[in-house]
Length: 182
Length: 182
DNA sequence: CATTCCATGTAAATAGTTACATGATTTA
DNA sequence: TAAATCATGTAACTATTTACATGGAATG
Image 1: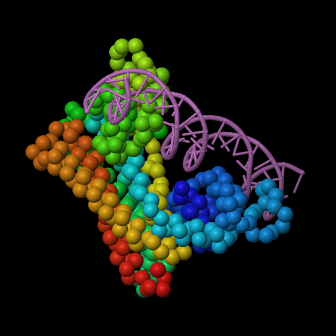
Image 2: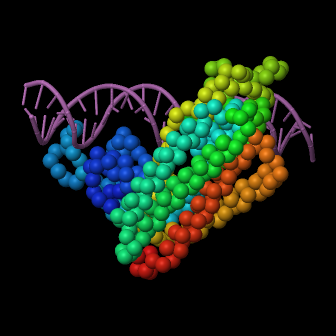
Image 3: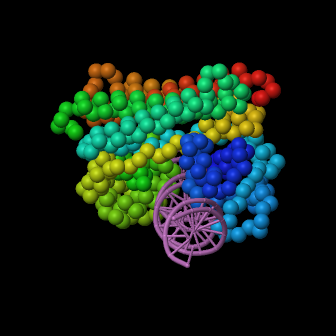
Protein backbone atom coordinates (compact mmCIF):
# COMPACT_ATOMS: atom_id res chain seq x y z
CA UNK A 1 0.00 0.00 0.00
CA UNK A 2 2.80 2.41 -0.78
CA UNK A 3 1.77 3.94 -4.08
CA UNK A 4 -0.51 6.54 -2.50
CA UNK A 5 2.29 7.46 -0.12
CA UNK A 6 4.80 7.71 -2.92
CA UNK A 7 2.44 10.10 -4.68
CA UNK A 8 1.83 12.15 -1.54
CA UNK A 9 5.57 12.49 -1.05
CA UNK A 10 6.12 13.54 -4.64
CA UNK A 11 3.28 16.07 -4.49
CA UNK A 12 4.60 17.56 -1.26
CA UNK A 13 8.00 17.94 -2.83
CA UNK A 14 6.24 19.76 -5.66
CA UNK A 15 2.57 20.09 -6.69
CA UNK A 16 2.19 18.52 -10.12
CA UNK A 17 -0.10 17.20 -12.80
CA UNK A 18 -0.45 13.50 -13.52
CA UNK A 19 1.96 13.61 -16.41
CA UNK A 20 4.59 15.51 -14.47
CA UNK A 21 4.30 12.93 -11.71
CA UNK A 22 4.74 10.19 -14.28
CA UNK A 23 7.94 11.84 -15.48
CA UNK A 24 9.22 12.06 -11.93
CA UNK A 25 8.39 8.42 -11.41
CA UNK A 26 10.79 7.67 -14.25
CA UNK A 27 13.65 9.16 -12.24
CA UNK A 28 13.84 10.64 -8.73
CA UNK A 29 11.09 9.14 -6.57
CA UNK A 30 10.59 6.36 -9.11
CA UNK A 31 14.07 5.01 -8.39
CA UNK A 32 12.60 3.56 -5.22
CA UNK A 33 8.97 3.09 -6.15
CA UNK A 34 8.16 2.69 -9.81
CA UNK A 35 4.70 3.29 -11.25
CA UNK A 36 3.07 3.70 -14.65
CA UNK A 37 0.89 6.61 -15.68
CA UNK A 38 -2.25 4.47 -15.44
CA UNK A 39 -1.53 3.62 -11.84
CA UNK A 40 -0.84 7.25 -11.11
CA UNK A 41 -4.02 8.69 -12.66
CA UNK A 42 -6.14 6.09 -10.96
CA UNK A 43 -4.51 6.73 -7.61
CA UNK A 44 -4.80 10.51 -7.99
CA UNK A 45 -8.54 10.00 -8.44
CA UNK A 46 -8.77 7.92 -5.26
CA UNK A 47 -6.64 10.32 -3.24
CA UNK A 48 -8.78 13.24 -4.34
CA UNK A 49 -11.98 11.39 -3.51
CA UNK A 50 -10.75 10.56 -0.03
CA UNK A 51 -9.80 14.17 0.58
CA UNK A 52 -6.04 13.77 0.91
CA UNK A 53 -5.24 15.90 -2.14
CA UNK A 54 -7.13 18.38 -4.28
CA UNK A 55 -6.94 19.63 -7.83
CA UNK A 56 -5.85 23.25 -7.91
CA UNK A 57 -8.78 25.43 -8.90
CA UNK A 58 -8.25 26.07 -12.61
CA UNK A 59 -10.59 26.50 -15.53
CA UNK A 60 -13.42 23.95 -15.78
CA UNK A 61 -11.88 20.50 -15.76
CA UNK A 62 -12.09 18.56 -19.01
CA UNK A 63 -10.64 15.44 -20.49
CA UNK A 64 -7.24 16.06 -22.01
CA UNK A 65 -6.83 19.22 -19.99
CA UNK A 66 -3.97 19.60 -17.54
CA UNK A 67 -4.92 19.18 -13.89
CA UNK A 68 -2.53 20.12 -11.09
CA UNK A 69 -2.78 18.59 -7.62
CA UNK A 70 -1.62 19.63 -4.18
CA UNK A 71 -1.62 17.81 -0.84
CA UNK A 72 -4.22 18.77 1.78
CA UNK A 73 -3.48 18.77 5.53
CA UNK A 74 -5.19 15.39 5.89
CA UNK A 75 -2.79 14.01 3.29
CA UNK A 76 0.24 15.32 5.12
CA UNK A 77 -1.04 13.79 8.36
CA UNK A 78 -1.60 10.44 6.67
CA UNK A 79 1.93 10.48 5.26
CA UNK A 80 3.51 11.46 8.56
CA UNK A 81 1.68 8.58 10.23
CA UNK A 82 2.86 6.14 7.59
CA UNK A 83 6.52 7.05 8.14
CA UNK A 84 6.54 5.46 11.59
CA UNK A 85 4.00 2.72 10.98
CA UNK A 86 4.93 -0.91 11.64
CA UNK A 87 5.25 -2.68 8.30
CA UNK A 88 7.42 -5.75 7.77
CA UNK A 89 9.96 -5.88 4.97
CA UNK A 90 8.69 -7.85 1.98
CA UNK A 91 10.49 -11.13 1.40
CA UNK A 92 12.95 -11.12 -1.51
CA UNK A 93 11.34 -11.94 -4.84
CA UNK A 94 13.98 -11.88 -7.46
CA UNK A 95 13.74 -13.58 -10.82
CA UNK A 96 17.48 -13.65 -11.47
CA UNK A 97 18.38 -15.44 -8.25
CA UNK A 98 15.56 -17.84 -9.05
CA UNK A 99 16.84 -18.44 -12.57
CA UNK A 100 20.25 -19.22 -11.19
CA UNK A 101 18.71 -21.80 -8.95
CA UNK A 102 16.76 -23.26 -11.86
CA UNK A 103 20.03 -23.42 -13.79
CA UNK A 104 21.45 -25.66 -11.10
CA UNK A 105 18.76 -28.19 -12.09
CA UNK A 106 18.28 -27.82 -15.85
CA UNK A 107 21.62 -26.41 -17.01
CA UNK A 108 23.04 -22.97 -17.60
CA UNK A 109 22.39 -22.65 -21.36
CA UNK A 110 22.14 -18.94 -22.18
CA UNK A 111 22.59 -17.83 -18.59
CA UNK A 112 26.04 -16.34 -18.96
CA UNK A 113 24.95 -13.86 -21.62
CA UNK A 114 21.98 -12.84 -19.51
CA UNK A 115 24.16 -12.31 -16.44
CA UNK A 116 26.53 -10.14 -18.47
CA UNK A 117 23.63 -8.09 -19.74
CA UNK A 118 22.33 -7.54 -16.22
CA UNK A 119 25.80 -6.66 -15.00
CA UNK A 120 26.00 -3.99 -17.66
CA UNK A 121 22.56 -2.58 -16.77
CA UNK A 122 23.41 -2.41 -13.08
CA UNK A 123 26.72 -0.73 -13.80
CA UNK A 124 24.92 1.96 -15.77
CA UNK A 125 22.39 2.48 -13.00
CA UNK A 126 25.18 2.71 -10.46
CA UNK A 127 26.99 5.29 -12.58
CA UNK A 128 23.79 7.32 -12.81
CA UNK A 129 23.30 7.29 -9.05
CA UNK A 130 26.90 8.25 -8.45
CA UNK A 131 26.51 11.10 -10.87
CA UNK A 132 23.42 12.34 -9.03
CA UNK A 133 25.29 12.07 -5.76
CA UNK A 134 28.09 14.28 -7.04
CA UNK A 135 25.69 16.88 -8.40
CA UNK A 136 23.11 16.97 -5.60
CA UNK A 137 25.10 16.13 -2.52
CA UNK A 138 28.52 17.75 -2.65
CA UNK A 139 30.45 17.39 0.63
CA UNK A 140 29.92 20.99 1.77
CA UNK A 141 26.11 20.85 1.84
CA UNK A 142 24.35 19.44 4.88
CA UNK A 143 20.82 20.73 5.28
CA UNK A 144 18.86 18.27 7.41
CA UNK A 145 16.32 17.14 4.78
CA UNK A 146 19.11 16.78 2.27
CA UNK A 147 20.91 14.41 4.57
CA UNK A 148 17.94 12.09 4.70
CA UNK A 149 17.54 12.18 0.94
CA UNK A 150 21.23 11.50 0.65
CA UNK A 151 20.90 8.40 2.81
CA UNK A 152 18.13 7.17 0.53
CA UNK A 153 20.31 7.68 -2.53
CA UNK A 154 23.14 5.88 -0.81
CA UNK A 155 20.74 2.97 -0.37
CA UNK A 156 20.28 2.90 -4.13
CA UNK A 157 24.01 3.09 -4.69
CA UNK A 158 24.80 0.29 -2.28
CA UNK A 159 22.08 -1.88 -3.76
CA UNK A 160 23.59 -1.48 -7.22
CA UNK A 161 27.01 -2.24 -5.79
CA UNK A 162 25.56 -5.40 -4.31
CA UNK A 163 24.26 -6.43 -7.74
CA UNK A 164 27.43 -5.67 -9.65
CA UNK A 165 29.42 -7.51 -7.00
CA UNK A 166 27.18 -10.53 -6.93
CA UNK A 167 26.92 -10.75 -10.72
CA UNK A 168 30.69 -10.65 -10.98
CA UNK A 169 30.97 -13.48 -8.45
CA UNK A 170 28.28 -15.44 -10.27
CA UNK A 171 29.95 -15.05 -13.68
CA UNK A 172 33.22 -16.07 -12.15
CA UNK A 173 31.64 -19.18 -10.70
CA UNK A 174 29.94 -20.01 -14.01
CA UNK A 175 33.34 -19.81 -15.68
CA UNK A 176 34.78 -22.31 -13.22
CA UNK A 177 32.08 -24.88 -13.78
CA UNK A 178 33.20 -28.08 -15.55
CA UNK A 179 32.09 -27.80 -19.19
CA UNK A 180 29.95 -30.92 -18.84
CA UNK A 181 27.61 -29.24 -16.40
CA UNK A 182 27.03 -26.00 -18.35
CA UNK B 1 5.87 -14.53 -14.79
CA UNK B 2 8.21 -16.37 -12.47
CA UNK B 3 5.87 -18.25 -10.19
CA UNK B 4 5.35 -21.16 -12.61
CA UNK B 5 9.11 -21.38 -13.03
CA UNK B 6 9.69 -21.31 -9.31
CA UNK B 7 7.26 -24.21 -8.98
CA UNK B 8 8.85 -26.15 -11.83
CA UNK B 9 12.25 -25.74 -10.18
CA UNK B 10 10.94 -26.86 -6.82
CA UNK B 11 9.19 -29.88 -8.35
CA UNK B 12 12.32 -30.91 -10.25
CA UNK B 13 14.31 -30.73 -7.06
CA UNK B 14 11.69 -33.01 -5.53
CA UNK B 15 8.18 -34.08 -6.64
CA UNK B 16 5.70 -32.83 -4.07
CA UNK B 17 2.13 -32.13 -3.14
CA UNK B 18 0.73 -28.61 -2.96
CA UNK B 19 1.16 -28.43 0.78
CA UNK B 20 4.73 -29.67 0.69
CA UNK B 21 5.50 -27.03 -1.92
CA UNK B 22 3.92 -24.41 0.31
CA UNK B 23 6.21 -25.49 3.14
CA UNK B 24 9.23 -25.24 0.88
CA UNK B 25 8.12 -21.79 -0.22
CA UNK B 26 8.40 -20.78 3.41
CA UNK B 27 12.12 -21.56 3.38
CA UNK B 28 14.47 -22.77 0.66
CA UNK B 29 13.13 -21.73 -2.74
CA UNK B 30 10.80 -19.24 -1.06
CA UNK B 31 13.77 -17.23 0.17
CA UNK B 32 14.01 -15.89 -3.36
CA UNK B 33 10.45 -16.18 -4.60
CA UNK B 34 7.72 -16.17 -1.98
CA UNK B 35 4.23 -17.50 -2.62
CA UNK B 36 1.10 -18.40 -0.64
CA UNK B 37 -0.66 -21.73 -0.80
CA UNK B 38 -3.50 -20.23 -2.83
CA UNK B 39 -1.13 -19.04 -5.50
CA UNK B 40 0.53 -22.42 -5.52
CA UNK B 41 -2.63 -24.50 -5.88
CA UNK B 42 -3.92 -22.22 -8.61
CA UNK B 43 -0.65 -22.40 -10.50
CA UNK B 44 -0.39 -26.18 -10.11
CA UNK B 45 -3.77 -26.42 -11.81
CA UNK B 46 -2.63 -24.25 -14.72
CA UNK B 47 0.66 -26.08 -15.11
CA UNK B 48 -1.12 -29.42 -15.19
CA UNK B 49 -3.64 -28.16 -17.71
CA UNK B 50 -0.91 -26.90 -20.02
CA UNK B 51 0.89 -30.23 -19.82
CA UNK B 52 4.06 -29.10 -18.06
CA UNK B 53 3.49 -31.22 -14.97
CA UNK B 54 1.23 -34.13 -14.05
CA UNK B 55 -0.29 -35.53 -10.90
CA UNK B 56 1.25 -38.88 -10.02
CA UNK B 57 -1.28 -41.61 -10.67
CA UNK B 58 -2.78 -42.38 -7.27
CA UNK B 59 -6.20 -43.44 -6.11
CA UNK B 60 -9.14 -41.47 -7.54
CA UNK B 61 -8.48 -37.79 -6.89
CA UNK B 62 -10.76 -36.11 -4.38
CA UNK B 63 -10.98 -32.83 -2.55
CA UNK B 64 -8.91 -32.89 0.59
CA UNK B 65 -6.88 -35.80 -0.68
CA UNK B 66 -3.14 -35.49 -1.13
CA UNK B 67 -2.00 -35.07 -4.74
CA UNK B 68 1.65 -35.36 -5.74
CA UNK B 69 3.02 -33.70 -8.88
CA UNK B 70 6.04 -34.29 -11.06
CA UNK B 71 7.51 -32.31 -13.96
CA UNK B 72 6.99 -33.60 -17.52
CA UNK B 73 9.64 -33.24 -20.26
CA UNK B 74 7.78 -30.22 -21.67
CA UNK B 75 8.08 -28.57 -18.27
CA UNK B 76 11.79 -29.18 -18.08
CA UNK B 77 12.22 -27.73 -21.57
CA UNK B 78 10.22 -24.64 -20.67
CA UNK B 79 12.32 -24.08 -17.56
CA UNK B 80 15.60 -24.56 -19.41
CA UNK B 81 14.48 -21.99 -21.96
CA UNK B 82 13.54 -19.51 -19.24
CA UNK B 83 16.99 -19.70 -17.66
CA UNK B 84 18.60 -17.94 -20.61
CA UNK B 85 15.66 -15.77 -21.65
CA UNK B 86 16.10 -12.00 -21.89
CA UNK B 87 14.23 -10.38 -19.03
CA UNK B 88 15.13 -6.99 -17.58
CA UNK B 89 15.68 -6.55 -13.85
CA UNK B 90 12.66 -5.04 -12.13
CA UNK B 91 13.21 -1.52 -10.86
CA UNK B 92 13.63 -1.23 -7.10
CA UNK B 93 10.35 -0.91 -5.23
CA UNK B 94 11.10 -0.62 -1.58
CA UNK B 95 8.74 0.82 0.99
CA UNK B 96 11.44 1.54 3.57
CA UNK B 97 13.58 3.66 1.26
CA UNK B 98 10.40 5.43 0.25
CA UNK B 99 9.41 6.06 3.86
CA UNK B 100 12.80 7.55 4.52
CA UNK B 101 12.27 9.93 1.66
CA UNK B 102 8.81 10.82 2.94
CA UNK B 103 10.39 11.49 6.33
CA UNK B 104 12.60 14.12 4.72
CA UNK B 105 9.39 16.03 3.96
CA UNK B 106 7.01 15.35 6.86
CA UNK B 107 9.37 14.54 9.71
CA UNK B 108 10.88 11.40 11.18
CA UNK B 109 8.37 10.74 13.98
CA UNK B 110 8.41 7.01 14.73
CA UNK B 111 10.94 6.20 12.05
CA UNK B 112 13.84 5.38 14.30
CA UNK B 113 11.97 2.60 16.09
CA UNK B 114 10.88 1.15 12.78
CA UNK B 115 14.44 1.21 11.42
CA UNK B 116 15.66 -0.59 14.53
CA UNK B 117 12.98 -3.19 14.14
CA UNK B 118 13.94 -3.79 10.51
CA UNK B 119 17.61 -3.95 11.41
CA UNK B 120 16.82 -6.66 13.90
CA UNK B 121 14.75 -8.63 11.36
CA UNK B 122 17.49 -8.44 8.75
CA UNK B 123 20.11 -9.51 11.25
CA UNK B 124 18.08 -12.58 12.06
CA UNK B 125 17.61 -13.41 8.41
CA UNK B 126 21.32 -12.98 7.82
CA UNK B 127 22.13 -15.28 10.71
CA UNK B 128 19.75 -17.88 9.28
CA UNK B 129 21.40 -17.74 5.85
CA UNK B 130 24.85 -17.98 7.37
CA UNK B 131 23.74 -20.98 9.34
CA UNK B 132 22.45 -22.66 6.19
CA UNK B 133 25.72 -21.87 4.46
CA UNK B 134 27.71 -23.59 7.18
CA UNK B 135 25.49 -26.64 7.18
CA UNK B 136 24.93 -27.05 3.42
CA UNK B 137 28.09 -25.69 1.86
CA UNK B 138 31.10 -26.65 3.95
CA UNK B 139 34.42 -25.74 2.25
CA UNK B 140 35.28 -29.30 1.21
CA UNK B 141 32.17 -29.87 -0.94
CA UNK B 142 32.12 -28.66 -4.50
CA UNK B 143 29.74 -30.58 -6.72
CA UNK B 144 28.84 -28.42 -9.70
CA UNK B 145 25.10 -27.93 -8.95
CA UNK B 146 25.94 -27.19 -5.36
CA UNK B 147 28.20 -24.39 -6.42
CA UNK B 148 25.41 -22.68 -8.30
CA UNK B 149 23.07 -23.05 -5.36
CA UNK B 150 25.79 -21.71 -3.13
CA UNK B 151 26.12 -18.61 -5.31
CA UNK B 152 22.37 -18.06 -4.97
CA UNK B 153 22.59 -18.33 -1.21
CA UNK B 154 25.51 -15.92 -1.19
CA UNK B 155 23.23 -13.49 -3.04
CA UNK B 156 20.80 -13.71 -0.16
CA UNK B 157 23.58 -13.26 2.37
CA UNK B 158 25.01 -10.23 0.62
CA UNK B 159 21.57 -8.68 0.26
CA UNK B 160 21.01 -8.99 3.99
CA UNK B 161 24.44 -7.52 4.61
CA UNK B 162 23.47 -4.62 2.43
CA UNK B 163 20.37 -4.03 4.52
CA UNK B 164 22.04 -4.29 7.88
CA UNK B 165 24.78 -1.97 6.65
CA UNK B 166 22.41 0.58 5.19
CA UNK B 167 20.10 0.54 8.21
CA UNK B 168 23.06 1.11 10.50
CA UNK B 169 24.13 4.09 8.39
CA UNK B 170 20.57 5.42 8.33
CA UNK B 171 20.16 5.15 12.10
CA UNK B 172 23.47 6.85 12.56
CA UNK B 173 22.38 9.69 10.29
CA UNK B 174 19.03 9.99 12.09
CA UNK B 175 20.91 10.36 15.34
CA UNK B 176 22.97 13.21 13.94
CA UNK B 177 19.99 15.24 12.78
CA UNK B 178 19.32 18.46 14.71
CA UNK B 179 16.50 17.75 17.17
CA UNK B 180 14.35 20.41 15.53
CA UNK B 181 14.07 18.46 12.32
CA UNK B 182 13.14 15.07 13.82
C1' DC C 1 -5.73 22.47 -41.40
C1' DA C 2 -2.90 18.28 -40.83
C1' DT C 3 0.40 16.48 -37.94
C1' DT C 4 2.66 15.94 -33.71
C1' DC C 5 3.01 15.99 -28.99
C1' DC C 6 0.84 16.83 -24.48
C1' DA C 7 -2.34 15.04 -21.19
C1' DT C 8 -5.83 12.27 -19.29
C1' DG C 9 -8.27 8.48 -19.35
C1' DT C 10 -10.83 3.35 -20.22
C1' DA C 11 -10.62 -1.60 -20.57
C1' DA C 12 -8.98 -5.98 -20.07
C1' DA C 13 -5.73 -9.22 -18.45
C1' DT C 14 -2.51 -10.95 -15.08
C1' DA C 15 -0.60 -11.38 -10.48
C1' DG C 16 -0.88 -11.34 -5.64
C1' DT C 17 -3.41 -11.13 -1.05
C1' DT C 18 -6.91 -12.13 2.42
C1' DA C 19 -10.68 -14.59 4.17
C1' DC C 20 -13.08 -18.45 4.37
C1' DA C 21 -14.90 -23.42 3.28
C1' DT C 22 -14.59 -28.32 3.22
C1' DG C 23 -13.01 -33.05 2.94
C1' DA C 24 -9.50 -36.59 4.76
C1' DT C 25 -6.54 -38.45 8.26
C1' DT C 26 -4.67 -38.93 12.71
C1' DT C 27 -4.88 -39.31 17.65
C1' DA C 28 -6.62 -38.66 22.37
C1' DT D 1 -16.08 -40.41 18.12
C1' DA D 2 -14.63 -35.62 18.92
C1' DA D 3 -11.00 -32.68 18.19
C1' DA D 4 -6.96 -31.43 15.92
C1' DT D 5 -4.44 -31.07 11.98
C1' DC D 6 -3.47 -32.17 7.16
C1' DA D 7 -4.66 -30.93 2.56
C1' DT D 8 -7.01 -28.83 -1.14
C1' DG D 9 -9.77 -25.59 -2.75
C1' DT D 10 -13.31 -21.12 -3.80
C1' DA D 11 -14.29 -16.32 -3.74
C1' DA D 12 -13.54 -11.70 -3.45
C1' DC D 13 -10.54 -8.12 -3.42
C1' DT D 14 -6.40 -5.26 -4.44
C1' DA D 15 -2.45 -4.19 -7.21
C1' DT D 16 0.01 -4.15 -11.42
C1' DT D 17 0.70 -4.39 -16.42
C1' DT D 18 -0.43 -3.86 -21.25
C1' DA D 19 -2.98 -2.05 -24.91
C1' DC D 20 -5.64 1.22 -26.62
C1' DA D 21 -8.73 5.66 -26.96
C1' DT D 22 -9.50 10.50 -27.05
C1' DG D 23 -9.36 15.40 -26.41
C1' DG D 24 -6.37 19.76 -26.30
C1' DA D 25 -2.51 22.72 -27.65
C1' DA D 26 1.28 23.97 -30.50
C1' DT D 27 3.52 24.29 -34.93
C1' DG D 28 4.74 24.02 -39.91
